[in-house]
Length: 320
Image (cartoon, rainbow, N blue to C red; front, top):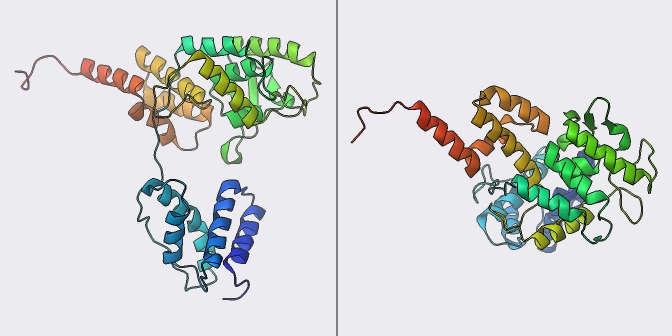
C-alpha cells in the first residue's frame, strides 16, 4: 500500500477526504481517530483487519453491551471501505456480529397540560447560564407548535421568519436540507410578542439568530437550552412515560407528530395520504420514520386498535 503507514495517518487522510465532500463527522471523526490510535498503540501493522476492528469495538466501549459494540463497529465501515480501495488486504466484517445498530426507545408524549405548564414555568425560571425567561418560553413554544428539531430552531435567523406569509425557512435541517414550515396564526402572534421583548434588548439584523444568549447576545447553544429545559422539567416533577430516564426537548417534536396523527385517526382521516404531508412538514427523509410512531407509541396503537375493532363485524364463526 502506498502512502501513509500508520493507522492514524490513514485515518487523518480519510477524514480530510470525507470533510472535503461536506461531511462534518464530528462524533464519527473522534471515533475513527480513537480506533486508529488504538491500532497503532497495540502494535498493529499493515492493512486494517476484522480482528483489530472487533477488538476496538469492545475494548473501548463505555457500556459493555452488544448494541454499543455494534454501533462502534459500524462507524468504522466507511473507513474500511476507503482503505480497501487502496489496499486489497483490508478485511472487515461483512455483517455486524454484534447485532442491530439501531433501536428506538418509546418517547414521552406530552399532554397539552404538561406543555402549558412547561411554558408557564419557563416564564419564571431563574436564568440557567445563558437561557432564561426571555428565550426559553418562545423556544419551547415554537418547538411544541411546529415539531422542529432543536438544532433547526437554534439555527434560525431573523431573515428566515416571514410573519406576513405565516412561515419560516429552515436552512439547517438534517442532512443539509432546507424546507418551509407553515405556522399557525397563534404561533405567529406568540413570536411577534416575543420579538417585541427581544428587540428591546438585542439587535434585530436579518443575519442575527432568533434565539440568543441572554448574556452575550450570540446564538443560543444547545447546552444552555438543555440545562434550562432540565431545570424547568425537574421543577415541575414530570415523570417520563417513555423509555428514557427523563423527558427530553426532542420529545416536543415526537409529541407534535403524535398529536397530529391522533387527531387524524380520531377524525377518520386517511392516514396513508396524510402521513406523506406530515413527513414532509417535519423533514423526515424516510417515510418509514413517520410510520414508526403508529407502531411504537401506545397512544397511537390504542386508536389504531379501536378502529380495527370497529371495522370487524359483530358475530361470526369465531364467536364462542
